[in-house]
Image 1 (tube, helix red, strand yellow):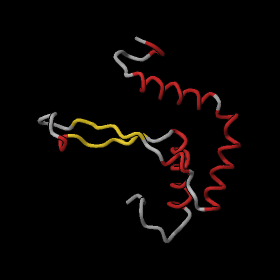
Image 2 (image 1 turned 180 degrees about the vertical axis):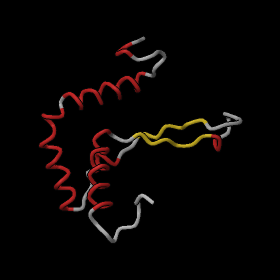
Image 3 (image 1 turned 90 degrees about the horizontal axis):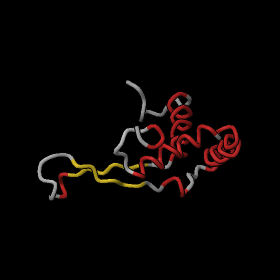
Length: 106
C-alpha cells in the first residue's frame, strides 16, 4: 500500500482527485447550502456555470500502433461539482417532465 492507502503506482493527478473527493465528502455539510443555492439559481435561470463546463481531456490508448492518432480515444474528466448538477438534472427531468424522451431508462 502506498500514499493514502492506495496501491502503487498511482499517478499524482489520481491521488489529488481522490483526495479532493474525500475532502468534499468530509466537508459536505459546510458546502451543501451554497451548492444548493448555485444549483437552484442555475435551474431557475437556465444557465450552467462556465467553470463547470471545463473538462480535462485525456487520450486513452485503444489498440494496435500507439504512434497513430486514430488508436486513441478521448476521456473527459469533469469537475467533481458538475456531478452534483448531473444528478439533480437527471432526477428533475427524467422523472418530473413527462414529455422528455432523452436519457430515459428503457
